[in-house]
Length: 315
Image 1 (tube, rainbow, N blue to C red):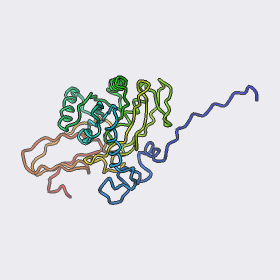
Image 2: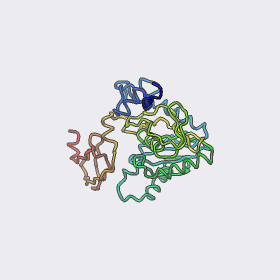
Image 3: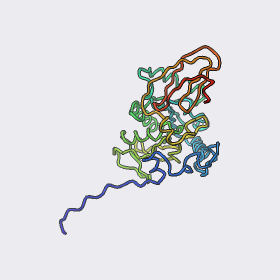
Image 4: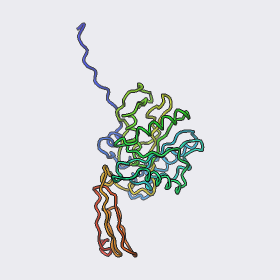
């Protein structure tokens, strides 16, 4: 009828692939063959994955291509697992003219009363010990709570604008890259880029769109997520599977239990010669010889500590 009101249009629904849908809503994959480093039964080598593009070596080669680009490199590390998440290949990734910003995530999981300047000094010392490139800046943040994020975003946008460079966010699997980018997309005045690569309206507050998961390999390539300063692009990159990461050998359910989600209470136990400490089913610490000492553990609530005699530890 003429003059009749049009029915309200349905909100546009986002189309996602089966892999992203399973990761986003079920925190698992439809098949182990779609997991980075998985797919070959009985294979201890993560590079024995059934799909070439899901092998860690493929991701390492992709990330190393950044050396030929002049760009801002934003490297994310997990403060709760600093040495396990520190990318040792940074010298071969960061070009000579590319500024390196180090972002230490999950500061909200550290014990209460921690002195932040002391943590910053320790992080810088460990970076020098690992012979990493010179740091342009260091920020302690929480992608979950937003702590430190406004300062980081202001520093990043100023650097990208003044140097006229794009930025790439990289880090080890489970360091929190996609969560950090989702926070930027949801809470900052960025110009968001949709899945088609087109820029959205400036100042538009974007809902989180990047898939996050405990499983490594959630991001499979360079993903343009936003434009800062109106013209310079911010990219997500695949999480690197590091050989010294225990988490790459755990199942989805085990990862969900082991990765802490909130600040835990440190537990201190006295360990004597001939005694062992079981960290859930993850690890065993034996005091073979020496004086007794206090061992303090910072773990997820789901990981239990069990002291026992070393002779009985294998039972």
